[in-house]
Amino acid sequence: MYEYVHGGDIYSAKEQIGKEEILDFSVNTNPLGLPEEVKQAIREALADSEKYPDPFCRELTAALANYEKTNQDYILCGNGASDIIFRLALGLKPKKALLCAPTFADYEKALKTVGCDIEYYYLSIEENFSIEIDFIDKINIETDMVYICNPNNPTGQLCSKSFIQRVLDRCRETKTVVLIDECFIDFIDQPEEYSVQPFVESYSNLVILKAFTKSYAMAGIRLGYTISSNKLLIEKMRTCGQDWGVSSLAQAAGISALKLTDYIKETKRLIPEERNFLIGELTNFGFEIYGSKANYIFFKTHDSNNVQSLKQKLLSKGILIRDCSNYINLNSNFYRVAVKKRSDNMKLIEALKEVTDDENNDYNIRWAGR
Ligand SMILES: Cc1ncc(COP(=O)(O)O)c(C=O)c1O
Image 1 (cartoon, rainbow, N blue to C red):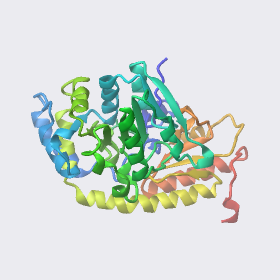
Image 2 (cartoon, protein in one colour):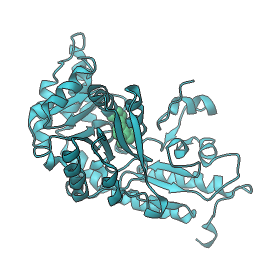
Image 3 (cartoon, helix red, strand yellow):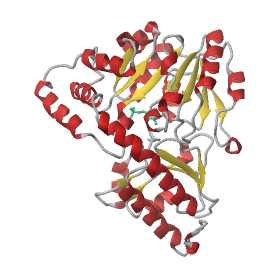
Image 4 (tube, rainbow, N blue to C red):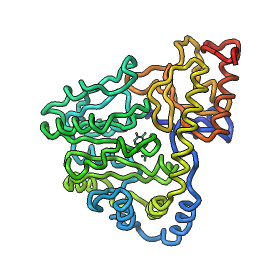
């Protein structure tokens, strides 16, 4: 049977507990929610929705080129960032690819559709799940593609720009295409210090992936894009999918989102504050926190023989968190929670106190001293 492997499945959660309202900490979208201006743009776009959308997303790619300070021909929009991931795999049909473990599941899923052989670079708990320099040793003439998620999902760890440049240099020698997934980069403290967008022009083997999904809380609208100066790659990705992958409503939403400066400013204020708050609170439960430089926190609970997982316990309180046991190289002690607004973060902490406070709990509770 098909297994859905991502967060955000509030639908199954509702069925499971018979509640209408689920507080979803399992997806990491902007806690400010879908901006009012974007909702209005979608309402206005409805008037034209009997027509096919612009297959070339002309107005949206022009706005993106201006926003990203790049060439319009370097941009391809898709039905969410995942659409681009699949288009790239289908377009290139790589025979061998290098992936980190753990990382976002769709790279592997897309590569499997073309029968690609996958080599894993196992991120280790001892190194705090960061990518080390020996990653580069794994790249050779047979490696057709390399994937780096920056910041990584689910760990929240970052790779420096200079490290990625070394990867790109090595991959230029081996004629390897490098996908850098920056879908969460807007949520880190200094995105400009980490984004490899300035390398687009000089590295034709670089493909950057970005999404409106997370940055503007548009998960249900489906809008992502890629930037690459390699026009052949862009063309291949365009060919490997339908021509109307981005609806007219999504195009209008994207154009309007790019104008929102106050929303981004407020996001940049809110995320570090709430991330620090949540990290402090989760540490008080004795959880080990790793990386977590983005708008989500990756942590490990203590080994447990408990039949009921932390996820199940919290679900009984109407809160959904991401159980990371289905990521390669992780187990059922690892979880990920989104950084949300203070009122929601407090609900998570209160629920955690309740579920870790019952007599059967085997978590290391430190509340006694507070
Ligand atoms: C790192 C990463 N890249 C890409 C995606 C896909 O995003 P979208 O919803 O825009 O397809 C996700 C979704 O969770 C993700 O975590």
